[in-house]
Every structure is written in structure tokens, then in C-alpha cells.
Amino acid sequence: MLLVEKLVHNISLGISFRSLNTSALVCGINKYTTPTRDFIVNNDILKEIINSKKEIIGLKEKEKLEVVYTNKNPRHMELMGFNKPSGFSTLYDHRNFYNKLNLEITNRHTNAFVENINGEILCYASTCEPYIRARLHNTTDVMAVVNVARILAERCKQTGIIRVLWRTRLDRTTEKIREFEGILINNGIILSEPATKVLQGPSQTLPPARPKRVIPRIMNNSQRRKGTIYRKDKKGFINEVCLDG
Image (cartoon, rainbow, N blue to C red; front, side):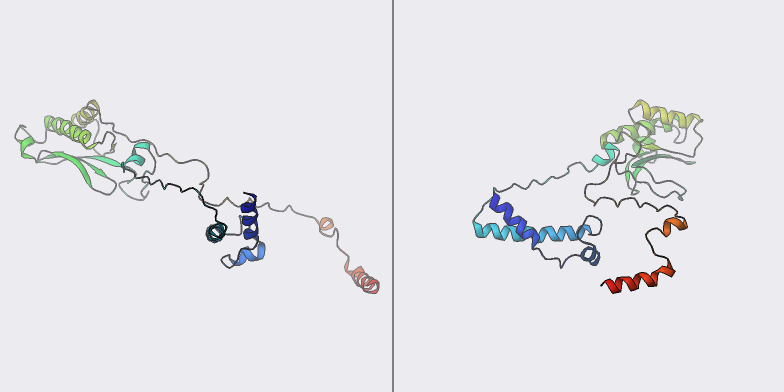
């Protein structure tokens, strides 16, 4: 092991600096002047040299198993509250949601559907469906809204959606809207989404932040002249230095 450590030390001292930028060459290699890419390239070159030397020495390492993780739940960020879309503040309809609940009551039909941030309709229920319309006396009254809400709640749970964003410009004091909200809540649908969670602390994949610049304090004339030579004495001082030299 001591032989390997000495080998790595000697290689690190004699490594090439062709991949570094101008600031790193002038100011030296440190965590502020050297970009992350230069560190990555430098480490790759060092690993190749170490591996070639180990092959020459005959040093073998244990084979490491590569663990490949496959995410089988694409909605895990949504369920935990992370990575929530923010949208644009200038839009008339804000797009800061995962899944949004919509209700449309026209002169002929009642439609309710859930859409995601991409505009895709995940599940819906409407009086346009013949099996629903055949059992209603009227397709726009309170009972139509109640039955559409009940069917939509069952379809949402079958799809795997239990939380939706409910934001409407309709009058929420009317009987239709109050019954629509009450039926969904009684069937286990939460009409709000969790607040956006932000990961705290600096990222582990980025270089450390630059130190805060300290602004120098204001100096008066006496402090500025400290350690300097007056102009009238400068000529004599230069002559004395030249004579002493």
C-alpha cells in the first residue's frame, strides 16, 4: 500500500496541465479559479495513469458491481411535493400545479375533468356520455353536477389521483358548486396540492461558492501616505539606493 501511495503522489506531481484554463495556469490550481470541468478532466487523466501503472505492477482490485437503479414510479416527485411546476406569473390562468380540476357547466351539458401540467386529460366525467345522460332528468341541474362529481371521484381514485388543485372563477356560494366540492371531499379527493418543497443546503455536485468580497474601508490622506515617500525626498532616496548598490 505504501508503494501505491508513493506512486499516486509522484503521478499527481508530474501530471500535465494542458487541459486547464488560463486563469488556473496564472493563479494556480484552486477551487475558485479552476472550473469543475478541469477537475473532472484532470481526475480522468490521473485515473488512467494510475490504472496503467497498476497493470504494470500486477496489482488487482476487487471487481465492483455496478448498481443500476430504475425508477418505477414516475410520480414520486409529485407525491413528495418536490419539482412542482411554477409556470409564469403573467399568465391569466396560473400553471403552478401537478393536476388541476376543471368544471364546465354549459346550457346543455355538465363536464368535469382533471388535466396535468402538459394539458393532457387524465380522467373525466360528462353528461355527454350516454350511460350518464340516460339516468338524468336534466343534464345541467344540481343532481347532474352531483352525479358527475361522484363518478369523477371514483375514476380519479382508479387512476391513482387523490389530490387535485381546485381553482375556479365560478361563484362558490351557489348550490351546484357547493355540492360538487362536497361530493369530491366525501369520496376521498383532496382539493388542494402540497406546498412546493425546496431542498435546503448547497448542491453536492457544484463547486463551493466564492468567498464574499470585503469592501475596503475609506482611508484618509495620512493612512494613504503611510509607508510611502514624499515626492521631494524621492530623488534623494533613489540616489542613495543607487550609491549603496
